[in-house]
Length: 167
Figure 1 (cartoon, rainbow, N blue to C red):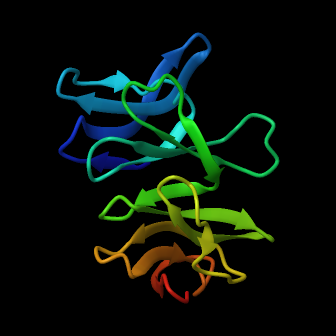
Figure 2 (cartoon, one colour; figure 1 turned 90 degrees about the vertical axis):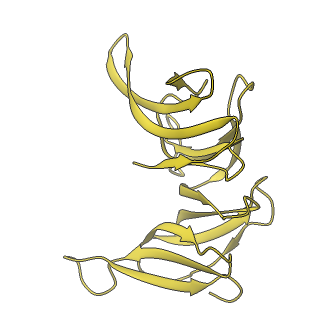
């Protein structure tokens, strides 16, 4: 569920299983020039990672125990001991220039597509519909976001594109 590739300090980031005392859990694994596979500190339970184009920060979502608002989005770079909370939401994806992150947030009974700066500021809706919209990804030029929605019916999901400027 999610992966990223870049040519920087972090070469790959992906979601994978890891052993804990109580069995298996998920976490964010990274490949660097020095290590083939290492757990990103504090990423246990993390999912849907994406790696910034410069190979420095990894963004991922994680369900927080006891949180009523759903998953949260975190950002972490090599050398940090814990990820930094940046907002509530899921399915984060960097823009090609690394300046923006598209994500989904469950609000008023459904998931909408949002966008924010990579530091977590300037959050705003891209879509506001009564349908669930999931797995957003910014276009190469950053003007559009493509996402999945089952507006056509319960049995199939379709791809949709919205302009970032006006949804």
